Length: 196
Image 1: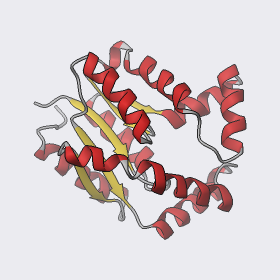
Image 2: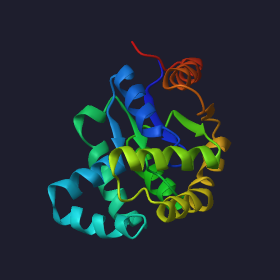
Image 3: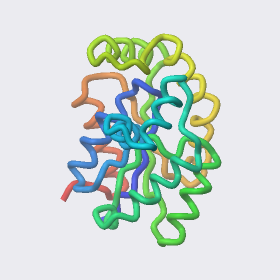
Image 4: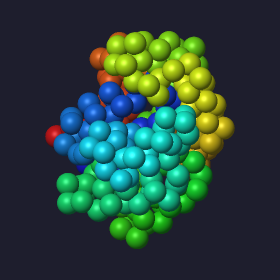
């Protein structure tokens, strides 16, 4: 069986957080979401949390160096030794290089990248719904548009790097949670990555 060192990627509102947790649980690996780490720090009012809150409230992204440090620390934990699922990192070409160096030192490169493909209007609709249901201040129309533009200009290009390596599986992210999850499972199984 192939080790599950995964990255899930897609525009905000693509369902990557929900699907990522589900995939990670099925495979018995930790889901490492930079967004969750940041939100936990904000909620706890830590020094990092206060910095992150100011950045996120402005609709900006947390700087690469800070994000990379947090991710490397998390991937060095014992529970990630047998595999992991990254969500929200890497999000640009600089972070890809940083992650590659870290994983190469460990002799443990990514084995698959799950790309959730969702039309822009669908992402916006889902984020607007989430904002009204969860009251998330970072899901207003202006910050949604800004984050989607950053995704399209900075994050989407990293997929080319992973496509060259032959590890990207494009998954249609439109449909029920179960339908999308079944598509992800099938793609991973084709790579020899399946729940034991």
